[in-house]
Length: 138
Image (cartoon, rainbow, N blue to C red; front, side, top):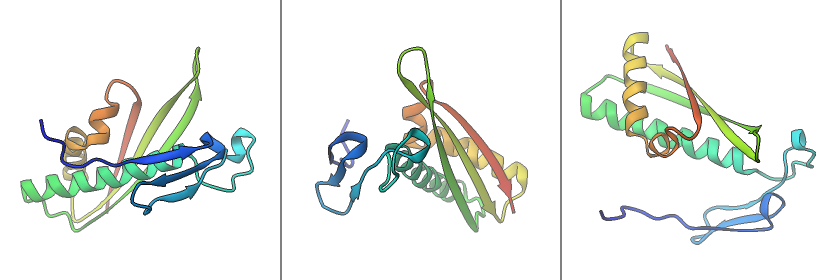
């Protein structure tokens, strides 16, 4: 199988460090969230994961809508990533809050369910992270 695209980012200093992509387009200070005792002077891995998953999922929705000729006139996806303790270490949980325009509630739910099968983040997390999908048609 041929790789379509490869992203590369380097972190120095972990959660209190700095991340930079090889092309320089991503260049962020990282810090521990206040909820975890940090000063929150930068972003954190959970925010980056929430942003990436939400963006990818919205693109998957547009892809499915285009392929199936679904009249999606607009959408918004909010990624919510939670960090939870477990017996050894930590785990993540995700909620994707999806709003659509131009669809009935039933059609929006069907689109989101299909996008969940197409999205690379959904495929990567399936069986590993609890993912909850909420859908609101406008």
